[in-house]
Length: 125
Length: 173
Image (cartoon, rainbow over all chains, first blue to last red):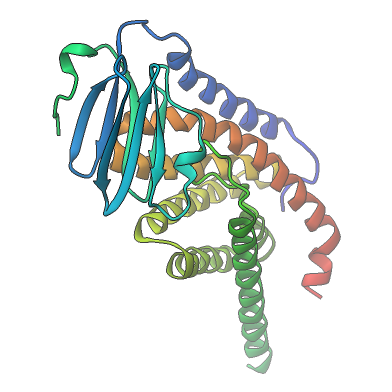
């Protein structure tokens, strides 16, 4: 039978979970400030794009057509044929470590530190 | 013999009732769109109220059957192979969290148990995300998922505290 009142163990669990979250967030809070690029991971591999150039990318991943937009240094999913459209509702990714995921399409956009212009459009998958 | 049979029938009926409640809560949650927009797949986890209730108030076997049944039926009716994988791993780790808590039952309340299970559930889902998208994506979402786990776990835990105080006697009459 569980305790009916809040206990020290409850507080320990909550504090441990918050600390773990803060620890994982700390790397995101202090980016290196280098040039950033967009990594698009889909079922055919990983593609890198520069964030300096505004562009639209259309690709099919997991049998689902997805349109990605790079605009003013940020990237987001403009449209997707996935059933829930959760990926379209989120904020644009712009800082190092930010990501946008379309799970049904098995597609992820991740902002990476460095690797800007010289790696633009490189295929790494 | 007849008493034993009656006990089994009662257990089966209760499992069916709990499974129906878990499915109903999962479905209501999915149609109401109680999602956090920038966190794919994040839900309050109302169905976990039923699973945790089954685990701590009935038996581990009943809770495992209800949890597995819910994941399977929701996956077949409303999900895809990928969403099934996310749910299954989340449910598996969440069940592991409940087993861990059951070792320290008297020292933990429903709030601590729910928070731990919610966080374990999210870690399980992040592990599946890491398999599909790499560790980088999973580690981006995990801290937010953990914070949501603390908030929603506290909410469902408080709900469980209330239900267990008021309705355990009614269910097992």
